[in-house]
Length: 195
Image (cartoon, rainbow, N blue to C red; front, side, top):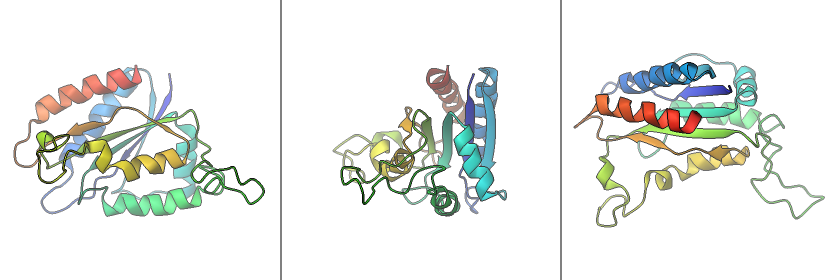
């Protein structure tokens, strides 16, 4: 059917070994290959080659980012990956710089992506409970949603010309986990997005 590239961004910490993100990665591979997709996986805990990673982004019809939420963003190892892989890919393989040119002032910043027609999906694991989002009465997020929090990550993929699929998230995974139900929801979510 199509080519999917799954990036597992988990960075192990003493309080979080990455078991949930690994389990979600395995579930995604199982479901997506079962749907007839070809799947390649890169994890932040293993070495990678920058040119191979850029080529895999070009090969993929869709990218699935599986990531824990660390300090309101992706782990440092994935930020390093972006700084390396995505910066080198600005040579025309992932984008033509930022899209602007001196010869055409109408070109806007962020319009240089070369991965148009491709999609991406975020799958995130949070310690924060689900009800802390999208509720203006909640102190911390002040009514903001998961995609508001991850707007910078969305912009990274948009910079390459990609289109988002619906974000998936697991919540309260450290203090009140319901992994069995999360896996059921994830299975259904993947089938909805990739069937």
